[in-house]
Length: 86
Image (tube, rainbow, N blue to C red; front, top):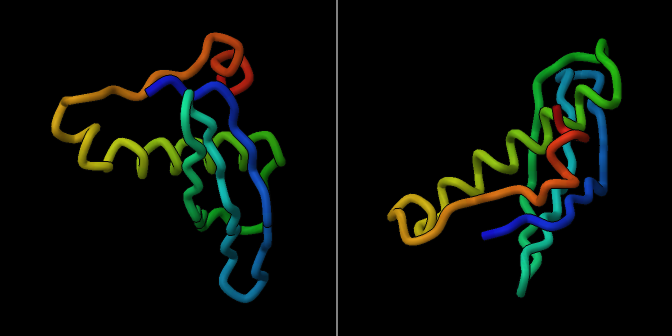
């Protein structure tokens, strides 16, 4: 699976719980996979750090999909996405 684009949408923050939530959409060659991600980071931190954390959580979820866990497929990021997430 080659991830060619990543988009974070529907971002919300709950001050009561300190939880950030968003949908992370990953575009693959023939499909779009959307994962609901939650982060317990509190209010402190920058937007770029939160974005990296959302993508990391989405990749964690993607790696738990049966086709990935079984070894039939692997998750790879397009070269232009890697520097933005470093």
